[in-house]
Amino acid sequence: MWLGSTEHRLPAALTDKLVAAASEDTVITRAHSGKPCRVVRSAFSDAWEAADAPPPLDMPYQQALTGRLLAAVEQHEIAPLMYEAAGQSVAWVREVEPVARIMDRLVRETRQSLDGLRPYLQG
Image (cartoon, rainbow, N blue to C red; front, top):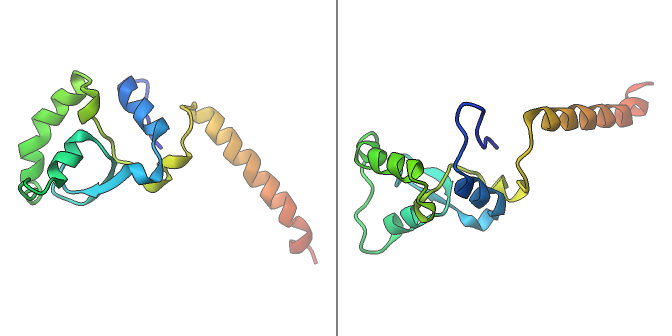
């Protein structure tokens, strides 16, 4: 999961929300752009799901409606309204790791798996 880069880091409150999230903390919503997208639930997504809320507009109108507000929410780090796109696998994120460490682990585990298959591939 992308949690930011040296040029653009997610606010700490949002990173903490993603690290703490479980699969059931995600919701599919059209509140951001008008297109369905799975996000970590927030007061923003909950407000758009309320019984008395208007339906989100089609794309690109919903983004035009909410874009400046959501940019300000992130800029000013208004934690209850902050959210990020995240699949159900967000439940597996437990810490922020450098890409180099993740890639080293993926390469190591791939080599181990391939080595384990070697006896079955020779023959």
